[in-house]
Length: 369
Image (cartoon, rainbow, N blue to C red; front, side, top):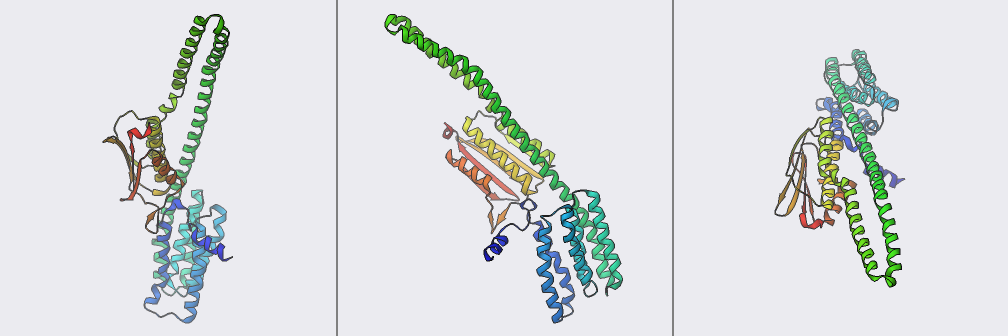
């Protein structure tokens, strides 16, 4: 039981894609303590405050993991707290503000706006029973409405980003399948005939070995030439992989960021890259852009790639929020995989927080040989 509680506390309290915003919004709860700056709370009020904190915050953080009808009980509970506190503390308007924000969990905008209207109507209905009416109603209406509408807009943008990422992943998956099928067909068509020819010539050379050594040498020479030609054809067949390398990934990043309304600046020095090195750079760019779309909440992204002293330098920087824990950047499985691929080519990966997350990857041109 104790271990389960510890695991629950260590797990993310809100979806990582939301960043740290929900933790900052939670400080709005302090509005309810404003009364006690002037009036000392009674022992009963202290007890109710402690109980309210213990029940409110679990409900608040749980609401970020719920949507549609599943969030309704949580929303009603928060509004009920506001109704119960309102006659004794005008700071109870903060519960109605939280309630307006929670209405954004409805996927249909119409339901979200209806929920906001009902929450504010409830605040108006309870106002006659509040001692300091203007202190209660003004924050609920002036802050609650805009906060609710802003939360609805932000939540819809986040859903659109998630949907875009899912479609992008689906397209990439289908492209990989199509590429494998193409290579499979090309290899079958190329090697089936060539290997059959090599087999026949090898059998013929074996028969001519003692009877006609000169003809045997000719057949062996033909086998060598045919094998070399087959090798060249195989290399040509798989060249298509290179055509969907860094340039393709850069174009995909440009389109994905544009769809998410994230500004994009690129400075890429044209150069011919070894296949292994290009693959690592492509995967690094894809992972960086995916992190920007999922977690950063950035409005602009810069990508540059240059050649400096025999090193390929890839820099990706955004102006969003970097995922941090305890002052250190959170390394997910994507970043760990990127570090392993870079290390395999004797490269270096550096991450730092600079008005967002800045990624710098350097790889030696000769390391991919």
